[in-house]
Image 1 (cartoon, rainbow over the protein chains, first blue to last red):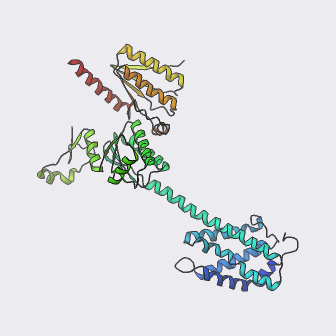
Image 2 (cartoon, chains in turn brown, orange):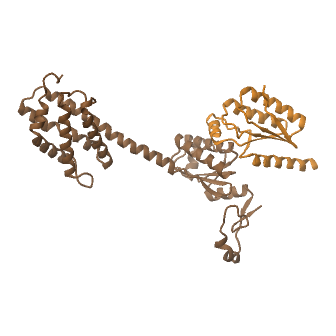
Image 3 (cartoon, chains in turn orange, purple):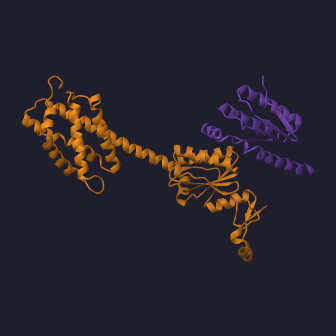
Length: 305
Length: 126
């Protein structure tokens, strides 16, 4: 539509560059708080000047309709870069969007004085498209951050700890959803194979709520461990959670203990071991140097059956 | 047709599945095993599935059935060596093989069976 006669816009942008830039910057600094280590006024100025120059180049050919075409490549790259860095610097979405949209006013004012007619409509549309593109890039960057954090949380919060030869503990922290259950299960089963474990203690002290779904996930984990030949003990069910589970009618048909210590004692018992207190004399002579290496059944604290 | 060999070790039977289980093979195994338990008077059955990479719902159910049949004939079945991926798949399929005893490896499985045989001898000696 705006293609037919050579557009006046590049000319306006070129001739009034400094005026437009000044007014744009004034509008921007009103709306975007600089400082606080995010972005300096100097940087903002550079970004604006570069953006304006690229915009002029892009519309030189008279294309104001579609920002996905080749002449806009460099402008898009630049805007994408600016928007992503805004997201990383912690700007709000509107602070990011205002970068493009506040260019409207200064340019339109120049157009009035130059009596450029229907072009203002096309230019408005163009800036709208650029603004949307800017938001897309902004959100894309935010989503990348969220995705990475999700992965990190999933990896961080599912350690499998070896308590003794053949006894593993799995302290669960955070909500159990299906994807986490999958990770937990895989880790646990892998460790069962590696350690040749007979007993796995699943400690749910760090699980904030247990509803029917979470219980089902727990039971799946228990069933999978049993298929590998390992018994499970569940520990750390807090009083409120125990009440909720009973009210919901959730039944875990596995041994459950109030604390990890109780569960560990049961595990030792089931594997034919017993913890005994040694006399004070022995403690002085053998206390530190002997340690309590797993499997050292004659060691400090453990006696085999 | 291929058949899975059933080895006898004293009063225990040893089955090592080293080929892909297909449905006919599983059915044949169930039949053979029942006959073998009857003829040998075995008290324990050890099934090693450590080389099985795929277990579908049918094979999973067959393992359950085999354990049920053996139990009726007074022999305990221990399934050993299930891979983690297989265990997860079975659980996702809703098969927890609740009638089957499991152990991590042949060693542990054999210990379970020996324990049972030992209990038996004491009972026999009364």
